[in-house]
Image (cartoon, one colour):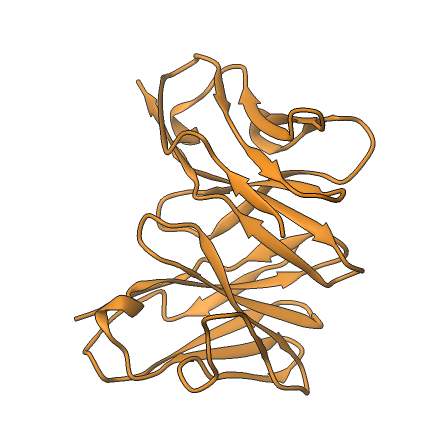
Length: 116
Length: 113
């Protein structure tokens, strides 16, 4: 079974500073990896995903993540954050079992607070 | 992408009562998923609902407590039965569009007093 660890429950950062949200996973097989964002009082929105190919994945709102197989990590980064990036971010992993049928396991989330 | 709506968006309920949450999607989907997000916790899958068949429940969740209906390819309901304060959570509906593209609704915020 796969699992996801988000190492930081809360990350405060000043506006226009860079940020990295850490995510490590454990799985004995190849995985697909995701980052979701949850803005206050909203549902989850897919930021980006890694399925295969280039290990650097670019997503929406200027975010990117790098898949590192040797370190079993999928850290999320943004070079310059904005107040509107204040939200909770969830890392998720799955082992694909066929189109439209896979178990998605989420981390506990990291609350990003951008300080003006 | 998909547009997913949920009703109600939030509710405060008394212990021992039941609440039915509706999920509507703007396109036809084979599988719909119901998740629970307890305060300060991550998302936990409750069940998977396919149209025309019984829902498949994850370990720790039972049909008597969380009955699900899936009458067509764009709609599903989740009922939280005989509620207790421990059921206070956000309940999220989710669908897959294509391989590895899971979309979530805005959630229903439930408080049980």
